[in-house]
Image (cartoon, rainbow, N blue to C red; front, side, top):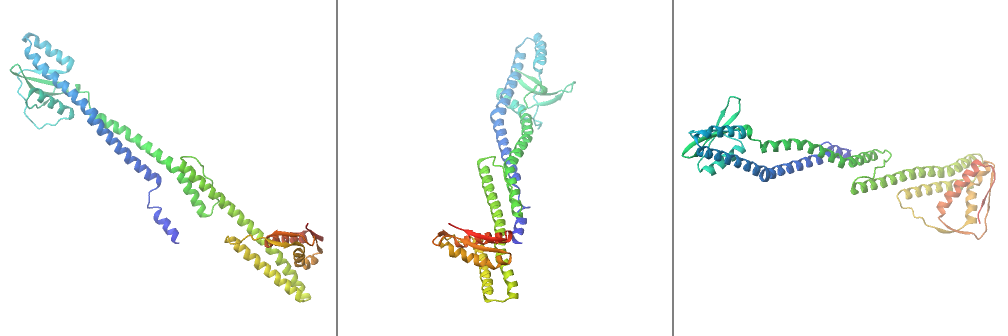
Length: 370
């Protein structure tokens, strides 16, 4: 129960790889966009706004000075030209506006600073709305010994750096989120497949094969997982084959013991008891070999075996059972024939062969070696 508790403790409370990747990428993208916005504001938008504000301030000062130098009869035409072309208006002998605490945007602040540098005194704007509902900002500029009121329509201001920056951020943030979501899914998809395959393997399901695609590390990990799955499949098949073989190997001595017990009831002899004991020892040895093989401890030790007496001994083990089934056993082998083999493995092969032959083929059965 301890491993299950560990899985339930870490699983629900930890974010998935996709969530962590998405969160990290969103934070990174947000920081990059803020850094880009700061750089754009300081080195692009702010200088452009200052230059535009300085041009407007220069036009206002120049308009006031030009009006003061013009003959009185040409001034109305000049004022009309300013209004039509530049959305500027002039008002002679206007009292300088006092500081009324009115706050302006970044651009108007730049205009005020530029006017202060050009006129040499503090400049404040006064807000006024005309008959068409347009908002005008007025200030007083000294020119020709008079205070000339100069006003401009705020609709002429086309530069809006802050709004442009906010619009850019508003457009890029959703795109960045979609890009981060796509990238997080792309990174986590093969790992999610591996996690599902590993979970199925832990449940005892048939191991699934993974696609060996994507980045090199992911592809190598999938290849290693597939190799592990193939080895597990091979082990499962080997286990099935081993169980089938063991059951088959045990069936032979069990069949001989059963026949010997029936004959022992009818005509008890010490030889049959010895044969039963040998069969029991053979079964015990077989089980020991299987256990050793399962633990990986069985050594494949070969030995020099004289085949004819060894084969005769194996026939003797099956002789009584074969006789009960109407079969006769014999061996044809040179007396000096040797073999360098694993005796236990060869014994299982010969015993299986004899068991199948006696079971399926009545009559004379001869083992030949040479």
